[in-house]
Image (cartoon, rainbow, N blue to C red; front, side):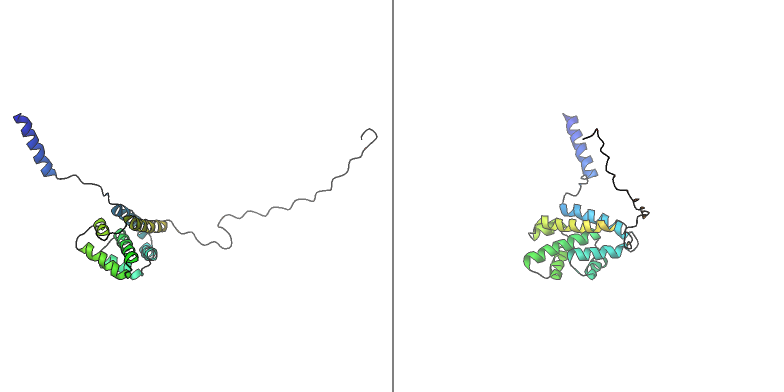
Amino acid sequence: MRTRITRLVMVGILAALVGPAPVAAKDPLDIEGRRLQAAAERAAATPGGAGRVVETLAATFAVPESTVIALRDQERLGYGEIGIALALSRTLADRDGLAAGAALEQILGRRRAGEGWGQIANGLDLRLGEVVSGVRRADRSVARLEKPERPAAEGSRNRLEKPERPHRPFRAERVERFEGRGRR
């Protein structure tokens, strides 16, 4: 009995020293934000990609490009976090009739206070599905940037042109058969 208690105490001490196991993010906003971040980082690594990512995020959430740049530079947010913040602010602005800038400042104020994205959404009683779909839309738009652009074709596709087919030769008309005595 004494060894059993000693073992339990040892396991307890060991668990306290190691600490809790890292848990994967189960918050849908964090998951979608990470996807958007990964896609945006890949697209931004291409020549001129950072500017295209900023344009795409601005167009997706109908904000000026300067807003996206300010969030990136001044607030030190990644592209995924920018997508989440803009999706939250857009949902809040649509629901409460706020100006986009006021809604964004409210979201950023809560973030600066240390709240997580899910806590912010729950604290403002926002529908998480709408916010997540906004982030997914941005993710799809940014993911398209990763694909190389095709050069514009002049009049036709960039395929090898087929040589012109020769015209069919003249075909003589069908001659009627001679019907002799034996045939009818």
